[in-house]
Each structure stands twice: as structure tokens, then as C-alpha cells.
Length: 236
Ligand code: ADP
Ligand code: MG
Image (cartoon, rainbow, N blue to C red; front, side):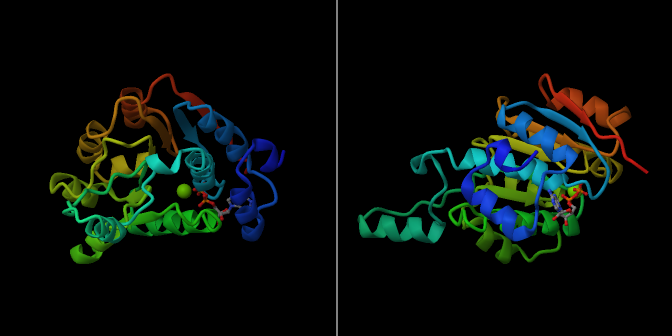
């Protein structure tokens, strides 16, 4: 199977050629069509099997189909300039991403953000921002003012911005929980619940985890709807 056969947008295919990806990995082959079809997913497959592209590519593809008028096409700065040129007052708008990726650590968040930058190389109007613990607050506000379509975040820091009204999740289409088992091990369960409660009930939810039983399975049951299971056995 090829990425072309999965029906991805030409701008994404071109970026994949540049990244040196010649064919989808097994988890990508199964997850990409399922995400494109709007399913919720529960996925377990080993580290290094290509899970980031498995959720990122189909969601990016779906973004290419949203009319510009419904997209976050302008940064706060551009909004301010356009309000001023029309003689209107500028009102601060919270960042309202369409996709949120929750991940346990800074390092993973930065890796996912870097992957998104690679995959959107030819989709320049799609912006991704990382919100991480330890990053200075003014810097984060500056990033949020880009009105990103995609937010990659560690749960604790995201909660701070939700509570202060800097992030609005009411327009979210896709919620990704990456390394869900690790997030639960790190004690993020309440934060995750608070975040999920701030998202629309009809969102698409994609959960990735080393295991899908125990606490993870229980949470998965609560936050997904008729999920499709994808379990890729590790060949060792
Ligand atoms: P996981 O999240 O499953 O641990 P990643 O998404 O981080 O895996 O991907 C692991 C590595 O494999 C990354 O360097 C990524 O760029 C690369 N990769 C992902 N998909 C492909 C592919 N289809 N072809 C070649 N390399 C890929
Ligand atoms: Mg990963």
C-alpha cells in the first residue's frame, strides 16, 4: 500500500516524499482510513511504529477540506490590523484549536510539533503550537496568539490556559491522547477529565497507549464512542 492509495492530499504526499517516507507503516495503514472515516480509535502498537503520522496525516487531510471561512486563517495580529482598518475595536479571542494532542512530556510534545511542521511543509496556512510546562508564560501567550489549528500540550499547562480563558476548546474536532498509559501513570487523570469536559461531545477521539486494559481501558470507555480497536502485535 502507498500513501497515495490512502487518498491523502497532494501537499501532504509531497511533504512525505521530502521526509523520505516511502510507504505507510502497519499502524498507519489501518489508522489513516479509520480516522478519515470519522471513527474513534483505540490503538496500541510499539514505540517507533509511526503513531504520530497515523493520527496527524488524516487530520491534516481533513483540514484541507474545511472552507477558509471556517478556519483559523488569521493570527491575532492580523485580526487586530484588519479590525483597525475597518475602524472596529479589536477584541481578544482565545485560541480555538481544531485538533488537540495531549502527551505526557515536553520532549514528546516537541517531537510531535516537529513532525507536524514536517507534514505541513506545503500547507503553510495550518499552524501548530506546543504548550508545555516550563515555558515562560509570555512566550506561550505569543504562541497562542497565532490562533493555531493544532495544539500539542502537556495536560497540566493546558489546564492553566483553559481556566484563564486563553484557550477555548468548544470548536475542537479531534482529541488525541498520545501515550495515554504514561499520562495516567504520571497522575494526569483529573486534568484529562477536565480537558475532555471542555470539548464538544461530538468530537473525534483517538487514544494511543502501550496497553488498552486496566485503567486506560476504563478511561477509553468513558471518552470514546464505538471506537475501532487497532492492535499491532510487535514482531520481536
Ligand atoms: P511512535 O509514536 O509509534 O513511537 P513515531 O511517530 O515517533 O513513532 O515515529 C518514529 C519514527 O519513524 C519517526 O522518526 C518518524 O519520522 C518515522 N516514520 C514514521 N512513519 C514513517 C514511514 N511511513 N516511513 C518512514 N519513516 C516513518
Ligand atoms: Mg509516539
